[in-house]
Every structure is written in C-alpha cells, then in structure tokens.
Image 1: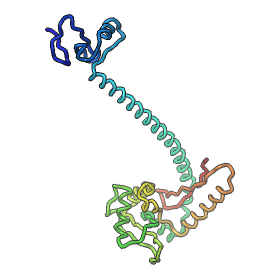
Image 2: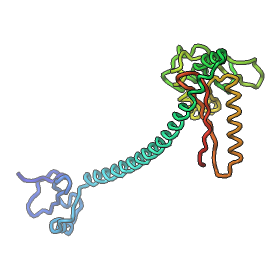
Image 3: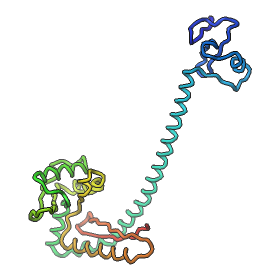
Image 4: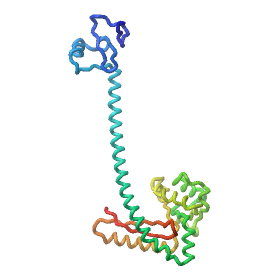
Length: 262
C-alpha cells in the first residue's frame, strides 16, 4: 500500500522527495513541511541526524519542561525532608531532657501535703486562660470560634464555661477563663496555640496559657526572672527559655530552664 503525506494526505510518488519524523515515524512531502533537498539528503546519509515534525517538536519541548519541573520539585521535597529530619533530631533531644526531668521530679509530687492547693491544681487542669481578647458584646461566641479555629476536633460541647475575670475597665481587655469538658480537649487546644500567630492581625495578638495557681504563678515568675538575669549576664551568645508541663500521674508544675545556642 502506497504511503501518504501526513500534511497533504496525498500519495507519495517515486521521485518526490519525502522525509520521515524520527518520533512519530509519519511521512511528509519535503515541500509540504518546508524541507529542502539538501536537508532530505542529510537525513538519509547521517544516522545521528534526526528530523522531527512540528507536532513532535512541541511534544519534546513540553516533555523537557515537565522533566525540569519534576526535578525542581524533587529537589525542593528533598530539602524539606532534610529540614524535617533535622527538626526531629532536635525535638527528640528536647523530649529526652523532659523525660529525665519528669523522672527526677516525680518524688516532688508526693510532697503535696496541702489538700486545698492540690484540689485547686486538680480543678485547673482542664482550664485555659485566654488573654488580650478585645472587649465586646459577643465575647462568648467569639472565644468559641477562636478555640474551634485552633482545632477542628473541638466542639461547642467541649467548652463548659467561658468567664470574663475581673471588673470591666475602659481600654483594658480582661483575661478569659475557659473551662474545658476534659483534659484531652484542653491538650488539643494547647498543642495548636501556635496557630494564633499565623492568623489575622487581631488574633495574632491573643495568647493562651494554663490556669495556674497563685503559688505556681509566683514560682514561674521567679524562674523566668532568673532566666532573664542569666541571659543578660551571659556573654557566650545564649538564649534561656522555659518549658512548663504537668505530670500525668499527679498534678504539679515543673519548669525547665534550658540554654540554647544563638
């Protein structure tokens, strides 16, 4: 069966110069695709010389672009994986420090011989304190929406009470006490508290914290003051920071001051 030119769909005749695409292997009249006789001769005599039709040229170009895009994406993914691995190593180190500190301080939990303080700590385990929320008429609903933005797993029923503390004073935002239904719900919110800094300008000014007793707040204030004093006196480029947690066995506040290289 005689071949046809893919361009003009006419049968190719003997004596009429034709070229064949290396990619799709379709045949074209040389004149139909603007190829002169010299080029035709080169395609026949030089094995390393490849001729592509217009359609295949576009395809090859797109493939090259796609390949470059895939390679760039792969490099970016590899970089992010390396960063995550480095962060995991650092996090594991900090977790090891925390575990050791918890073991060292377990004995202190047995020394809580004041029932009133222990009960106050127990009652505050499920509480969250929220600060710098602009005063308004719909504070309760706004607080609920903020909490639910931090974790999609939190429902209205997880927030038992929302209370503004203190008397209203002009140009002052009162702290808000949020009583959660259970400790698990509270932990979901506290673990996501960093998201506040990534929200709108108004929400980024809000922060949340554990509901500490007066003695815990006094102890924390003293420890932070000590850390700042050590940081100010340090000439080796160190930043001192505090970590606060509660033991799952019994209620209790522990603060770890660590030195971090700048």
